[in-house]
Image (cartoon, helix red, strand yellow):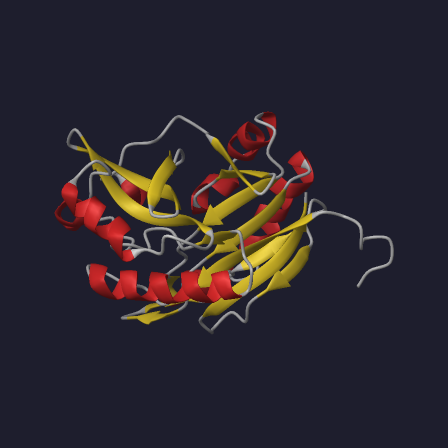
Amino acid sequence: MVAGVSAMKTVRIAAAQTVEFREDLDAALTCAADLAARAEAKGAALLCFPEGFLQGYLTEAAAARRNALDLASPQFEAVLRRLPKTGPMIVMGMIEVENGRLFNTAVVIDRGAVVGRYRKAHLMSGEQAFEAGSDSPVFDVGGLRFGINICYDTNFTEAARKVAERGASLIVCPANNMMRRKAAETWKAAHNAIRGERCRETGLWLISSDVTGEREDRVAWGPTAVLNPAGEVAAQLPLDQTGLLVFDIPV
């Protein structure tokens, strides 16, 4: 225990580092339920999953549309029934469709019910299947207010600043950094560095959740990490292992 910190109120948060699940909803939900149960056992109030976790980070238009889910649909109701009705609030990456429009979305679920969503605002050139979101909602769990930036969003000061302006103290960052090996090597140390800039600019904490593993000529190492307002890594999972990162964040 750190001297002088014992009386500080904290909220326990968690982030999952998982393999990719591509067009395998059942396997993704089985994994999510298991990790949510583990996070609940550890006392976590909030649990983040990677970008596109539910159906896969599918950027090809036909595959994205084939797997997209409307949050108001019976199909998504079935997804909610597979998730725990107790335990942490969940932030989960998914492909969303609404009125025919596709979004790279992070849905926020509390006790089996949708309490909100964030749609990725800054899209890369390979994400033309999606439309950009414009809202930056914030959420509260145990007195901890957080907003969401999805992966590439963290390259933009504006995205983090919107979270800060709404009174949040934490950015939750679902990410998917499955890249061609050469690019993965180049970016390996850069992800936390870039996110750290956003923390220093805004004074916010950040927790990221990413994938790990290999697919064809691609590799993902994460990182799944917690960064403090100084942009320093406060906790991180090993880059090449699945797991659950748990951290007590001051409120």
